[in-house]
Length: 346
Image (cartoon, rainbow, N blue to C red; front, top):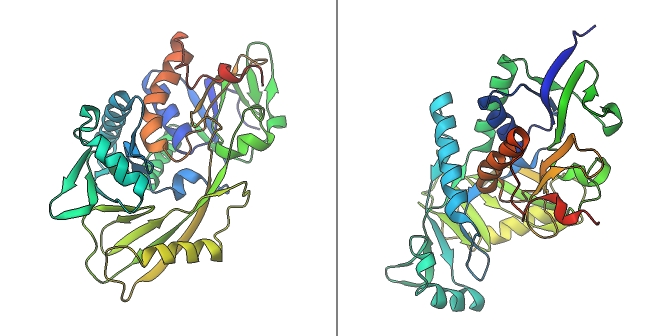
């Protein structure tokens, strides 16, 4: 029989959201325990971990980027120093101006001071621009390091937990032998189906990527031509990603593979002798208004959510995890754009 365990905060889910929130809470002196089902495909482990401040055909600068980007750099640097491993890799991005919308947007952005430091021309090329302050997070390496850390501190349990397994009480929640003051749900898209927060307007979207190898020289930069190409070490690279709304399976598909291989044909690299080394699929926890879901349940004030980061988790989670941590410890108000109170009438 397991010994009773009392903790401050019980977290369900150990993807990037749950793991970074747990790390911040531990650093703040809180006792945490994580419930993690490793048989679930985590979109955090499938994602390329791209950080890109300017997105879309209209070249839109991410809102609050002046806070989001420094928070990401600071947290990843702290984690790199703690675990003696590089997790974040700065790498410029070359973006094609193949669409008229993008060309028109670039004409406007060139004189917009807000975009200085993010976008610039490429000498001798009129159909390509360069994006700065971009790069990628090695999410798998980071999650492996964090999970090993949690295991050493005996604060993570591998299990398949269901909502019905959680006993709700006025001042605490309980799962088997673990009693916690607060429960935080970080289960990604699965929260949309059978969780305390299924009332929130998730819009899950399936995405597929290919891992490839080439004996030829790869581009120096990330390439963005609608689909992205991410060069890695040793001739390895990734291409992604497909986008399929309403799909609920996490299986790679032949149609997804063909879509990515067709996109690869137009990428600026030697096409000979490229081989596929892996094909992955995952489901992004997107939301109706493209903003994350943070906050406490309207009927169960000791049950909260930290979720809904879509395809921007590597950029968003460091800053929002700090806000969530402050909210849980000090009762600080959450950012209005992410607070689930915006859907209190849903």
